[in-house]
Image 1 (tube, rainbow, N blue to C red):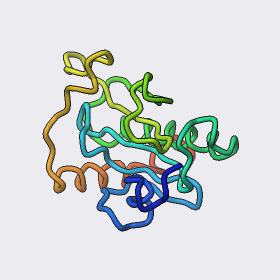
Image 2 (image 1 turned 30 degrees about the vertical axis):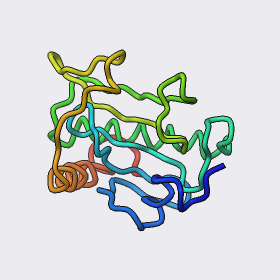
Image 3 (image 1 turned 90 degrees about the vertical axis):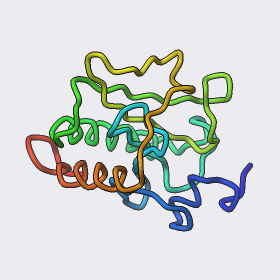
Image 4 (image 1 turned 90 degrees about the horizontal axis):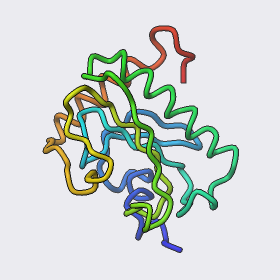
Length: 151
């Protein structure tokens, strides 16, 4: 098991590594992916380290998906190009998990995007920290607006 100092997501949650934050509470932390498949790609992680989905407290697991659902709705209303959403969770190396801290991807999709699930691990868009911060702010401002339940 990784210690928090060895896990990049634990360091991000602790504030010792940079992140463009979309959402945070006592159980769940959401931030912009630094290797996004499309602009607006958010990672939703548990605050407390859980390497695999089976290690995750069931209530926190449910909350992870509820927050992802609300972020997906907010993303659609944020002005980011988004005609659809993929939620993706890789559980284990063979499934494509690269960071062994459970994380749920919220990926905006649109017609003609270059995201191919089979080639996804090799194809990222280049993005600056300023772009990540701006995108996080757009989604943050859309959370709680519109018809969805507030986070």
